[in-house]
Image (cartoon, rainbow, N blue to C red; front, side):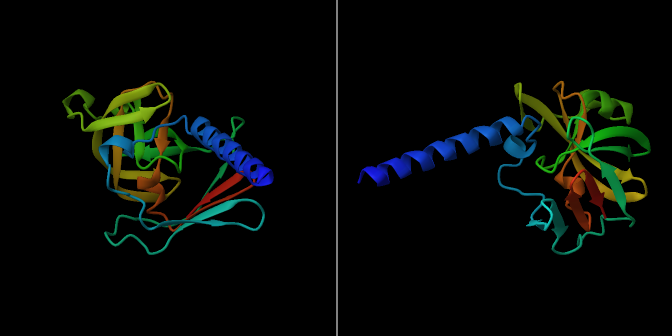
Length: 191
């Protein structure tokens, strides 16, 4: 009986530790936490383990709405802070974004949204986004086109987040419309 209690205690401690690590690693926006309580914009998104310790995510079927507008392949190298960044073109304007597969939608900083011509103050607040600094208001918008080096997606759901995130996030509303997202070592490939 003592061994069983000891084993249960160890399992509980490991579970609590893993939950703490997961909570600390999600310091970015969880944009869908409040605004999209029942929806999952990445419902065709699957993640599969790779042989060499990387991961791969592929759409099980292509977007039915024709939102994927062009093909190609983009390779991103891991930066010194261990994240992947992409120089995107959003509705014709350059925006640097951090690729965040944990963000449900593209999350734009107020500064980036205004730079691409969005009148943020005229958009109604449509919910809140959970950030490391707490819950902040967000405003939903549909971006006509998001492109990375010729790889373009049309009709991308996004949110303007009134928080000092530092960088906009390239989330699932873009990534899930691609044919594949693969990470192996320090390289991410988008197709």
